[in-house]
Image (cartoon, rainbow, N blue to C red; front, side, top):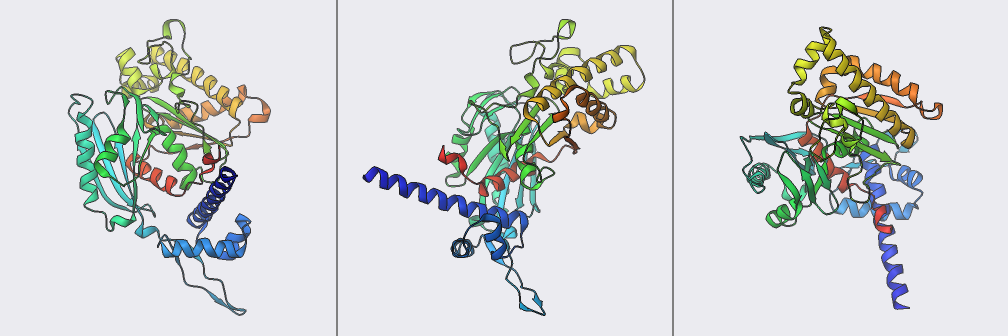
Length: 390
């Protein structure tokens, strides 16, 4: 009987937490918003909204704004996030540099830091640069109580739940406990990690170009190839938190089946990424683009092959997941998106069923990933913890 009561208390507490997060997220995304509108949109009672709002006001997380006056009298007082007093640190971990940004929840940049890295000597060496960047940014936090966390963007396989870097060849990490190392040093500051492509999908849904979408796929063509799959507003992680490794989709065969750092052959990233072109063909992206634009026959054949297999791979993903939006980004898209994206869209729509062909394509320039990593902190701060029920 006691166990049942405890379970009831636990579930009631969890429902209370979920309702509060729903309200908080609505205030962030749609504020200024009145209490009566919060009740309508959440389905909660006016009393429940009043209780939640009072708690958030007492914690200084939200503020009341000026009420407007009309002929009918004083209108309800709108609420909005106290965004200028909430802060996040974002860190981009790259092979040649570590970049950090301190921003407020209005996405205003307070301080940015870049530390160039000549060469990582061992698996502990990147930590020296990370600590240096974080501690520089901490000195600029206006109010330490308003710092809601540190987010990190990593190129590689990331177990975001356990805070482990499963594999990042550029950083020399395999099963590296990054979150644990940071928690030991920074105590109570929340630490969040995510793969760089997943990060774009998650933050894009919070306050970016994917904010109006429930179902989307993001493809990043850069030094590597990555993707993020969002279903019903939630990131698809997979059993081992490595879902979305689109770069290792097997696409190339025959003479094009080049070895991949994952140990296999024919992965998309071996020829459709900056590092893959450099490693397997000894050619830089700029050189290949120049040769394609100058109608070099060999370069045109390679481009045709990459275009064909990439379109087919994306079409298969679209058929399986039926997204509303497809987002393209990355340094390759920055340089060749003008002529590649229209062709890809045409080819993909030829291959997918009619029922999946009404997707919309979005293209964005490669974002500042340190700021995107700070957005990860915002996402967790506003997260609705539905997974705790499972």
